[in-house]
Image (cartoon, rainbow, N blue to C red; front, side, top):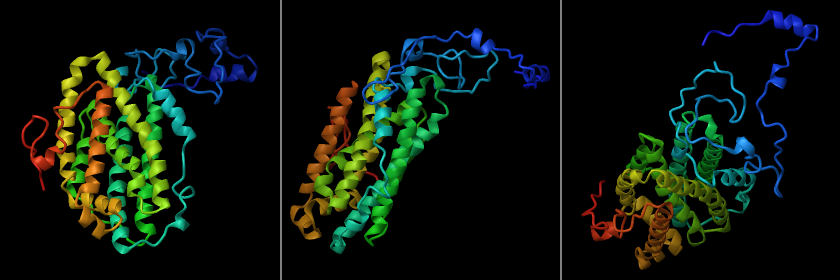
Amino acid sequence: MGAATVDLEYFERAKRGQFDLGWLRDTRSEWGVRAKPSKVGLTLRDIAVGSYGEVPDHPDRRTMAPRGSDVDPDVPDMGYSINDKAEVWSDNVMELYEEAVSRQWSATRDIPWSDLPELDPDLEHAMCQFATFLSEVEMIASDFPAKWLWRINHDFVEAKMFLCTQVMDEARHTEVFRKRALAGGGGLGKAKAVVENFLKLVLDAQSYDEGSALMHLLGEGLVLSVFRAGELLAPSPVEKKIFRLCMQDEARHVAYGTMHLRYRLERDPSLAEDFHSYLDKGEDIISVLFTTPEVVEPTAILAAGSVKGAEELGLAASDVLRTRVIEEYLTRCDRAGLPRRGRMRLPGAVLSGTTGGQGPVAVAS
């Protein structure tokens, strides 16, 4: 493509009112196709009308031109590497975007920080250690989509827009848990190598498929289950509200990841083994979390309400949470069309020294 040049002759003609108007008369746009608002307003689904709602499986161009517009033949190539709709699409992505923009909340204004009670020091330290862990893991769900957004073809703009909302959601989650760790005087706790190893696995993923499976289905799915257990873990109404608000965001991300994987496998079932191998690697690292004191013990203390209560119950309280986390994860895999029962490498698993028929789990330090 040659360098753009200024058309001085047009400039002079335009000054005299001699307009070109080719954009008006020569357009191929669908004149008369009218998007009608639904009860909640004008949604992405409402404007998916006529050819504008047709998302190509394999776009002809790699530009930022709006899908359905008339495009100059000499537009520059943006170099997008994700040009297959099935790599990023899900059938629920438009609805998830609308929900995301309508349910934004503020970690500054919408949490009743002034109502935060003074907790027993052991309980406060447990909450702060747990908040440290959550503040650490949540930002990967901002970094991963941000890494891939600029590689996604603009014809899949609805998926890109949804991922933008995820970036903002997860930044807010990191913010709210960092604030919780500092608001009660306990401060930030310990960051463990096993956690960082999982985050690195997601960020280093060689494909969007791999990273999405590890993050949306496994990582965020497990965190969603923890947020759902907020009533059990929250030491005060302040944390209950934090968990509840984070849960509504996380549920969208997991819903996208689950339905994206389903969409992907329905169009190419041969990819199933690839996804299984991604989750095998992720589960091997996640398994170590179930034997990491900085993760296990704070949740046990929070669930029991005290160190003494946790010692009396042993791991019973956290076992209930672990069982829920694993069952919800397996259910999501089933829904996505990638059954993991019999292949899963998570505990009960770790505690018995075996996996679902796959041999011993190596628990690294």
